[in-house]
Length: 371
Image (cartoon, rainbow, N blue to C red):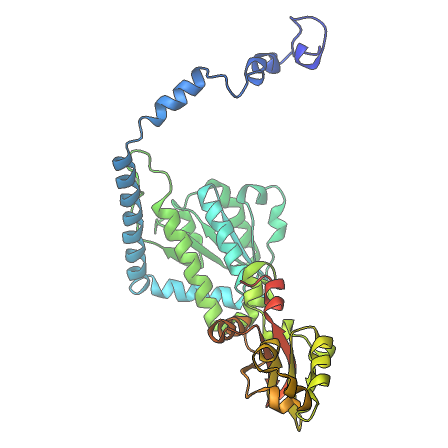
């Protein structure tokens, strides 16, 4: 094989045996961003075909058509589709292994999303590509699993090996399709046959309405399962530790300060010593406790408002704000944010039966990624 001039080989006529592809691409690769060739003109001309009013009307028609289809699906779920839906939910809930979700093409993209939704809401799930399944990935499906297969026509050829494998192992199959007499519907333990509402475009019937309906039905199954399992915000937060969502689902006890960062003094503490304790704590405040219970708080704001030369002769009780706002350590961080915003304060003591166990500062919330 002889090198093309694109690779620095000798001779202008030297090419790859496969047709000198790089040589033909060289004029395109050598074009500058400012080269307004025929391609740019064609792109510009095509953009002129977009009529704003027509584009918006087409978008609205599509969304309304999908909304009508979802209403029809919701109606079917209460009449006709209800028994298969309940059967499918029970199969998913009783699976000892994982939920395997599979589909080809656009149905495959929907299947990936449904698998991700299951996994993030307490139902272990994974996507298996039906074509890859025929080349070894069938080993991912075992007897304890449950399979959710998606196909608009119910005749997707790539699913045949997967369906046979499931029948051989006795793995239950939930089929999601629009054709009641299809191979998938007949092969399913629970057949979720949805009403066929067509697609958004008659000119080019690409999967639009049908994929929206499949996605919605997958979400419906996931939510039905999480409600049946008693899946709570705490469970959700445990598997969503990252990002703003994970931070917002944390509890006060997860980020509150304890020990030296939680300065506490007695009400009889002289004001100069109270100021020293406040500086040592580094949070701009100190809690005042009596018999182990929080009775007041001194903040740097209290100092600005009340400190006079005479105050240095008094104790913490004279300077403190009595009955301060507090929060439970098990409370969601969102509650702490709401209280701070409402009261326009920057910290809260966490208490259990009146006894301080920690303190949460606005800086702690910002550091945790909560806004």
